Length: 178
View (tube, rainbow, N blue to C red):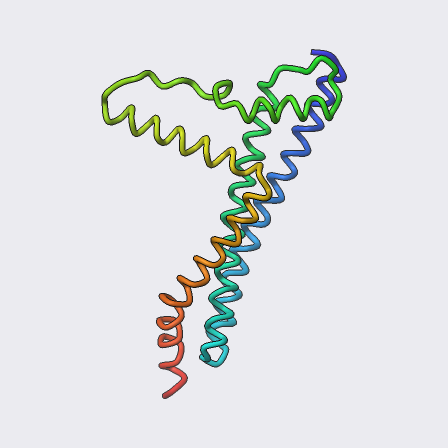
């Protein structure tokens, strides 16, 4: 391994590691935001518009946590691939980054084949491995993640509004009415 290739790998590892640290901070921040929204929701008048807005704020936050988890998994996979990927012919940062991403997108290079068997355990293991690969590879597509975010926002926001807002409103109004 040449010195320039080693420096390029180290720089890419540091870059993706810093991205992973950022996504961990986002997840923690969104967790605190959930508590803040619930606290604000408990202290505001129980109107339909308030419940609607707070439900969609919570849906947006939960969706952001899921998207941050996808990106965290992808960055972790890139860090692992940066160690294992072969070096390009010209080891520059751009070439090495492209080589690592192409290595990361080819599951045959980073997963062990599961021996074919008829047992239920091997079928479950094969499905779990496919699901894990699918989750990891989705973290790279920012356009897909944007569509997933909007879909989850609508689903989570609507679910929170219909299932949790009435319960939350009743639980908070009882002590105030007395």
